[in-house]
Image (cartoon, rainbow, N blue to C red; front, side, top):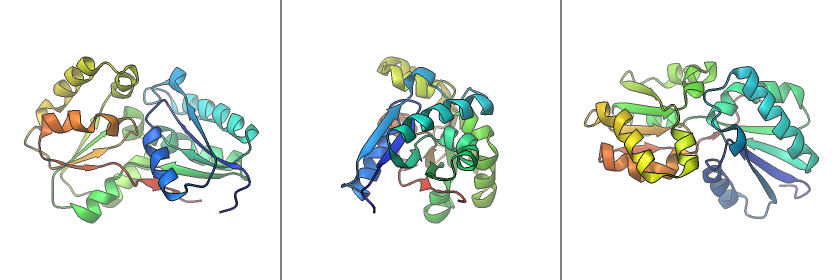
Length: 211
């Protein structure tokens, strides 16, 4: 890859660091800028227009910093803004992210599946297109309102209390868990302690959608 310019990665806080870590493994010699937008976290409860405006401001900053590629390391931002950004900034390559539901289709189709994501992601047109394409017809959708924000604050007791409340109905009922927000892998073990021996699908979910 041409070393001129940088790779910009942004998310609504610390969650995108899980994506950045995987990118660096693949491209260790590139220069990176990571933009953690904790001020506007969470994105999941914002309107499409609000998310597009927030992402637009971040992208303009990253372009000013000589970024040649911009990775939207947030499922909600990818679903709500990638088409808008590609239309506006045709000279920049945007890489978007999506929930790892296709991995369930490929590796564990026969098992009941729980998708944990923000409300914004679950309500998005792109997510429903993904779901309809790979639906195993035994999938539960769980909008985890406020979970990313709790992870940002880092209060483990608060996080565990919230996870126990929202996950209790699924104990013993699911085998696959799709972590549809880049923050959620940070509490994967907390989720495992509640749901038991489940398969997690989260990493390796980079997708360019349609360019």
